[in-house]
Length: 253
Image 1: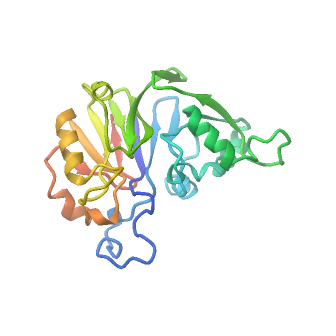
Image 2: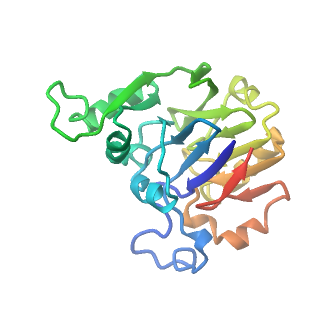
């Protein structure tokens, strides 16, 4: 299974508009972060976790010509606002795009993209086939996916474990029952927003402590803000089996 980081930034991305900090002015391509998303490819399935505002740019930048399904972690706009651009795949393959999300998230999509779900549809609008998921395992074309529920302050957010790869974003607290689902995972992706305390995201230190508890062979940090620091400098502060992810990075699981 191949995983590509399509975006590793927080809700504003990096650089941040109108910011002249060292990170936002960095010439290192690893410090240029689109909104968080990953592409997962198996032998017969290609899926994306979240379609943020950079979705179109990500699909073009990484030449994603085939997309079979979309998983949504939660309803915040930095994870959903690129959904309209699935039209290209509708047209190319002449089929609705399967999307998998909790009922609450689907309901929010139906409000924000009311034209997609209208009974009298305008020609050329995106076409979706919604699949409601819960906090229990489900399959997409035979691939088992295990949801992992975390709390983003008080908002439930789903992470996903696929084989030995686990992806969690926008987490601040995780129950013991959900942590148990991560047992034995070989690759963990977890959010690490910044150094300062934050109400709804792991800080840098909290992410390190969580990663060390899970003890995966390799952990990657994502959903990174410009406040964390430059990629090269921050990576030097991390244990050998933990590193910052960067846009475009590919890993084999």
